[in-house]
Amino acid sequence: MKAISCAVAVALLAAPAFSAAPEPSPLAIQRLGTRVVHKPGQESTSVELFMLTLGDTSKEDRKFGERPDKMFPFTMDSTHYAPDGTGAWRLYQFRWPDLSGGPESESFLAFMRRPEVKRLLEDIYTYEDFGVPGDFIYKRMGVPESELPAPFNRFPPAELAPIKSFYRYNADGTMNILLAEPYDEDVRAHEVFANWKLLIENSRGG
Image (tube, rainbow, N blue to C red; front, side, top):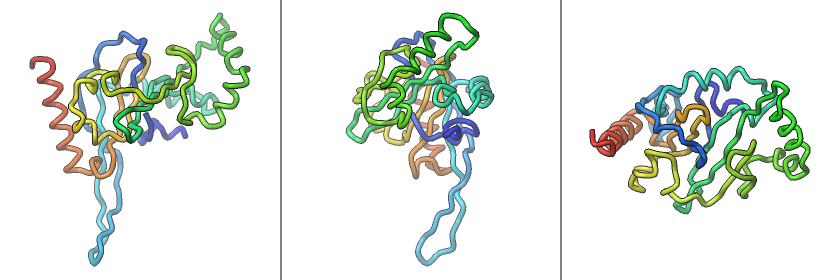
């Protein structure tokens, strides 16, 4: 599951309600890979895929990649959002613990010993609430669009439709945004990018 961010071939869910980090900027588009498209009676073609980012995610992407696999899901140190199909969103927040031997090390070990945490780690993406904001794992289902992190909380509902999932790094508020098929394909992805860029600029009065 470490593919959730490494080469930015992510697939899941970003923005802790307790964070006061500034709104990330700017919006950018990045190549993600390719998809082979099969059409009846035609030769298969390869389509380029794209994802979007808000702010420079490279620093946190690199830190994520350097953390040990055995520490998953805490390696992600980010808050993930995904639409639940009803107009609401699912939130999954994971926090990287300070394991240098201070008080947080003991808190993390105590957290990991809790029976409900052990059960949760068997399937962290179950559709159920868990924990409190700022804990090592916090999950909340049924999050309204108005509580999404900026700028998405100001987007018209139709502009949220292309989102498959996105996550916001806890440390700096930068975001990686996966687009749903076929919005992730070349032309459609660039249309989403252009629309969002205009929305963000207009919301800032720019």
